[in-house]
Amino acid sequence: MDNKSSLNAIKQMIGIADVGLLYAKDDYDRERYTAIKKIALDLLVEVTDQPLDKLSNFFLPVKNYPTVKVDVRALVLNNENQVLLAQESSDKKWTLPGGWADVGYSPKEIAENEVREETGIKVKAKRLLAVYDKQRHPHPPEPFYVYKMVFLCTYAAGNLKPGFDMLGAQWFSLDGLPELSTNRILKEQILSLCTKVRNNDLSVYFD
Image (cartoon, rainbow, N blue to C red; front, side):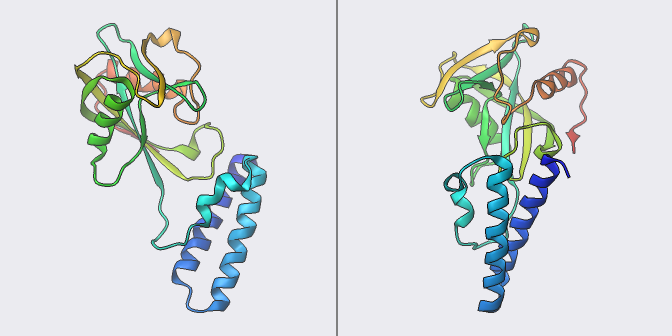
Protein backbone atom coordinates (compact mmCIF):
# COMPACT_ATOMS: atom_id res chain seq x y z
CA MET A 1 0.00 0.00 0.00
CA ASP A 2 1.48 3.36 -1.00
CA ASN A 3 1.59 6.44 1.23
CA LYS A 4 -1.52 7.99 -0.30
CA SER A 5 -3.56 4.79 0.10
CA SER A 6 -2.34 4.45 3.69
CA LEU A 7 -3.38 8.03 4.49
CA ASN A 8 -6.85 7.46 3.05
CA ALA A 9 -7.22 4.22 5.05
CA ILE A 10 -6.20 6.03 8.25
CA LYS A 11 -8.76 8.78 7.63
CA GLN A 12 -11.43 6.11 7.16
CA MET A 13 -10.33 4.43 10.39
CA ILE A 14 -10.64 7.72 12.28
CA GLY A 15 -14.10 8.27 10.78
CA ILE A 16 -15.20 4.78 11.84
CA ALA A 17 -13.86 5.40 15.36
CA ASP A 18 -15.69 8.74 15.56
CA VAL A 19 -18.97 7.18 14.49
CA GLY A 20 -18.42 4.39 17.00
CA LEU A 21 -17.83 6.91 19.78
CA LEU A 22 -20.88 8.89 18.73
CA TYR A 23 -23.19 5.88 18.95
CA ALA A 24 -21.40 3.87 21.66
CA LYS A 25 -23.87 2.30 24.09
CA ASP A 26 -21.54 1.47 26.96
CA ASP A 27 -18.04 2.00 28.37
CA TYR A 28 -16.86 -1.20 26.71
CA ASP A 29 -17.57 0.23 23.24
CA ARG A 30 -16.17 3.65 24.10
CA GLU A 31 -12.91 2.16 25.39
CA ARG A 32 -12.33 0.15 22.23
CA TYR A 33 -13.26 2.91 19.78
CA THR A 34 -11.00 5.29 21.72
CA ALA A 35 -8.17 2.77 21.40
CA ILE A 36 -8.80 2.45 17.64
CA LYS A 37 -8.72 6.22 17.27
CA LYS A 38 -5.46 6.45 19.24
CA ILE A 39 -3.84 3.85 16.97
CA ALA A 40 -5.08 5.70 13.89
CA LEU A 41 -3.73 9.02 15.19
CA ASP A 42 -0.33 7.47 15.88
CA LEU A 43 -0.29 6.15 12.31
CA LEU A 44 -1.39 9.57 11.03
CA VAL A 45 1.60 11.19 12.73
CA GLU A 46 3.90 8.77 10.94
CA VAL A 47 2.32 9.17 7.50
CA THR A 48 1.93 12.98 7.54
CA ASP A 49 5.14 13.65 9.50
CA GLN A 50 3.25 16.15 11.66
CA PRO A 51 3.45 16.34 15.47
CA LEU A 52 0.44 15.08 17.36
CA ASP A 53 -0.36 18.53 18.79
CA LYS A 54 -1.07 19.78 15.24
CA LEU A 55 -3.70 17.04 14.94
CA SER A 56 -5.33 17.97 18.26
CA ASN A 57 -8.65 18.77 16.58
CA PHE A 58 -9.16 15.02 16.30
CA PHE A 59 -9.37 14.83 20.10
CA LEU A 60 -12.47 17.02 20.21
CA PRO A 61 -15.54 15.17 21.57
CA VAL A 62 -17.66 13.74 18.77
CA LYS A 63 -21.11 15.36 18.82
CA ASN A 64 -22.28 14.87 15.24
CA TYR A 65 -21.73 12.37 12.45
CA PRO A 66 -18.27 13.12 11.01
CA THR A 67 -18.34 14.47 7.46
CA VAL A 68 -15.96 15.67 4.77
CA LYS A 69 -14.54 19.21 4.98
CA VAL A 70 -15.31 21.54 2.04
CA ASP A 71 -12.82 23.96 0.49
CA VAL A 72 -14.31 26.61 -1.84
CA ARG A 73 -12.12 28.34 -4.46
CA ALA A 74 -12.71 30.98 -7.14
CA LEU A 75 -11.28 31.13 -10.65
CA VAL A 76 -11.20 34.74 -11.85
CA LEU A 77 -9.84 35.69 -15.29
CA ASN A 78 -9.29 39.16 -16.74
CA ASN A 79 -9.52 40.33 -20.35
CA GLU A 80 -5.90 39.29 -20.96
CA ASN A 81 -6.74 35.73 -19.87
CA GLN A 82 -4.68 36.18 -16.72
CA VAL A 83 -5.72 34.39 -13.54
CA LEU A 84 -6.15 36.07 -10.15
CA LEU A 85 -4.02 34.54 -7.39
CA ALA A 86 -3.51 35.33 -3.72
CA GLN A 87 -0.28 34.78 -1.79
CA GLU A 88 -0.69 32.85 1.45
CA SER A 89 1.11 34.13 4.53
CA SER A 90 1.48 30.59 5.92
CA ASP A 91 3.77 29.26 3.18
CA LYS A 92 4.38 32.39 1.03
CA LYS A 93 3.04 30.55 -2.03
CA TRP A 94 0.17 31.39 -4.36
CA THR A 95 -3.31 29.96 -4.80
CA LEU A 96 -6.77 30.62 -6.18
CA PRO A 97 -8.62 32.76 -3.62
CA GLY A 98 -10.71 30.65 -1.28
CA GLY A 99 -10.87 28.69 1.95
CA TRP A 100 -12.97 26.48 4.18
CA ALA A 101 -16.72 26.69 3.73
CA ASP A 102 -18.34 28.82 6.45
CA VAL A 103 -21.60 27.86 8.12
CA GLY A 104 -24.47 30.16 7.14
CA TYR A 105 -23.26 30.98 3.63
CA SER A 106 -23.95 29.30 0.31
CA PRO A 107 -20.94 28.03 -1.69
CA LYS A 108 -21.51 30.89 -4.17
CA GLU A 109 -21.39 33.47 -1.39
CA ILE A 110 -18.26 31.91 0.09
CA ALA A 111 -16.43 32.12 -3.24
CA GLU A 112 -17.38 35.79 -3.66
CA ASN A 113 -16.53 36.66 -0.04
CA GLU A 114 -13.14 34.95 -0.16
CA VAL A 115 -12.08 36.82 -3.32
CA ARG A 116 -13.07 40.16 -1.80
CA GLU A 117 -11.40 39.43 1.55
CA GLU A 118 -8.16 38.07 0.08
CA THR A 119 -7.65 40.31 -2.97
CA GLY A 120 -9.87 43.39 -2.59
CA ILE A 121 -11.72 42.54 -5.82
CA LYS A 122 -15.50 42.19 -5.89
CA VAL A 123 -16.70 39.37 -8.13
CA LYS A 124 -19.87 37.53 -9.12
CA ALA A 125 -19.91 33.75 -9.08
CA LYS A 126 -21.27 32.55 -12.43
CA ARG A 127 -21.13 28.76 -12.34
CA LEU A 128 -19.56 25.73 -10.73
CA LEU A 129 -16.55 24.44 -12.66
CA ALA A 130 -15.39 21.46 -10.65
CA VAL A 131 -15.77 19.37 -7.52
CA TYR A 132 -12.52 17.62 -6.64
CA ASP A 133 -12.09 14.75 -4.19
CA LYS A 134 -8.75 16.02 -2.96
CA GLN A 135 -7.25 12.63 -2.15
CA ARG A 136 -7.63 11.63 -5.82
CA HIS A 137 -5.17 14.36 -6.86
CA PRO A 138 -1.46 14.74 -6.06
CA HIS A 139 -1.81 17.23 -3.21
CA PRO A 140 0.50 16.86 -0.18
CA PRO A 141 -0.88 14.53 2.53
CA GLU A 142 -3.06 16.05 5.25
CA PRO A 143 -5.23 14.72 8.08
CA PHE A 144 -8.58 15.92 6.72
CA TYR A 145 -10.69 14.35 3.99
CA VAL A 146 -11.56 17.26 1.70
CA TYR A 147 -13.85 18.06 -1.21
CA LYS A 148 -12.75 21.11 -3.21
CA MET A 149 -15.32 23.21 -5.13
CA VAL A 150 -14.15 25.73 -7.74
CA PHE A 151 -16.46 28.46 -9.09
CA LEU A 152 -15.96 30.63 -12.14
CA CYS A 153 -16.26 34.26 -11.02
CA THR A 154 -16.24 37.46 -13.04
CA TYR A 155 -14.89 40.87 -12.07
CA ALA A 156 -17.46 43.33 -10.69
CA ALA A 157 -15.52 46.15 -9.02
CA GLY A 158 -12.52 47.13 -6.94
CA ASN A 159 -8.74 47.23 -7.09
CA LEU A 160 -6.16 44.72 -5.95
CA LYS A 161 -5.53 44.98 -2.21
CA PRO A 162 -4.30 41.91 -0.31
CA GLY A 163 -6.30 40.97 2.78
CA PHE A 164 -4.82 41.36 6.25
CA ASP A 165 -3.79 37.69 6.36
CA MET A 166 -2.41 37.56 2.79
CA LEU A 167 0.99 38.64 1.47
CA GLY A 168 -0.12 39.58 -2.02
CA ALA A 169 -2.74 39.56 -4.76
CA GLN A 170 -1.84 39.62 -8.44
CA TRP A 171 -2.85 38.67 -11.98
CA PHE A 172 -0.67 36.02 -13.64
CA SER A 173 -0.43 34.70 -17.19
CA LEU A 174 -0.99 30.96 -17.49
CA ASP A 175 2.53 30.46 -18.84
CA GLY A 176 4.02 32.47 -15.98
CA LEU A 177 2.41 31.04 -12.87
CA PRO A 178 4.35 31.51 -9.61
CA GLU A 179 5.14 28.76 -7.11
CA LEU A 180 1.77 27.42 -6.04
CA SER A 181 0.54 26.35 -2.62
CA THR A 182 -0.06 22.75 -3.70
CA ASN A 183 -2.01 21.93 -0.57
CA ARG A 184 -4.64 24.33 -1.93
CA ILE A 185 -4.41 24.14 -5.74
CA LEU A 186 -2.36 22.40 -8.42
CA LYS A 187 -1.02 23.87 -11.66
CA GLU A 188 -2.75 21.19 -13.74
CA GLN A 189 -6.05 22.05 -12.08
CA ILE A 190 -5.72 25.75 -12.92
CA LEU A 191 -4.78 24.98 -16.51
CA SER A 192 -7.60 22.48 -17.04
CA LEU A 193 -10.16 24.86 -15.51
CA CYS A 194 -8.98 27.72 -17.73
CA THR A 195 -9.21 25.46 -20.78
CA LYS A 196 -12.77 24.57 -19.79
CA VAL A 197 -13.67 28.28 -19.61
CA ARG A 198 -11.88 29.14 -22.85
CA ASN A 199 -13.69 26.32 -24.71
CA ASN A 200 -17.03 27.36 -23.19
CA ASP A 201 -17.34 23.84 -21.76
CA LEU A 202 -20.44 24.09 -19.55
CA SER A 203 -20.02 20.66 -17.97
CA VAL A 204 -18.91 20.34 -14.35
CA TYR A 205 -15.85 18.22 -13.61
CA PHE A 206 -16.32 15.89 -10.64
CA ASP A 207 -14.48 12.91 -9.19
